Image (cartoon, rainbow, N blue to C red; front, side):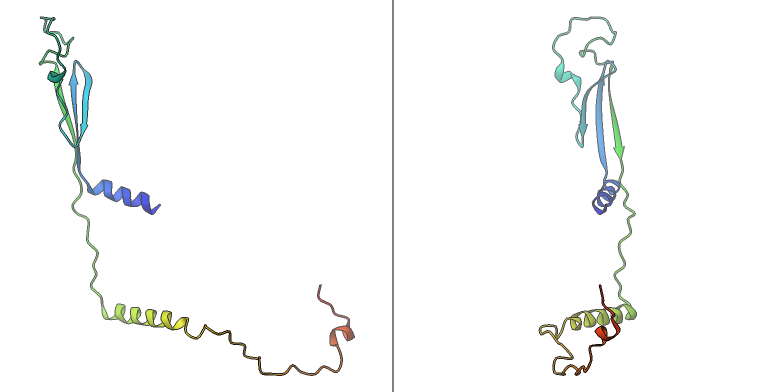
Length: 132
């Protein structure tokens, strides 16, 4: 999802041009970010003397069209001015995070040095309560 949003922001902030060249009502060449080649490069013969748009040789029936997408330059920059409250919060956060894992190198068992109480009767058997 974040990759899709990043691509959307990149697409909306950038500008590009699509150039198309038409001859006889048909698309001859299309170019992205460059100029489209005209059909005079593809002219081979000039046999038809009429002015109807039937061949690539006629210059009157050729046209070029450009589609320009202008990007937005009004994207706001982030405000990185730190206030006193932000600095206090960051100091507290990092201090507690660093001290959170101190002293966990050894396994601390608080009742390790205590003896278990002496039982004179087994209460579970006496009351016949068993955990299943």
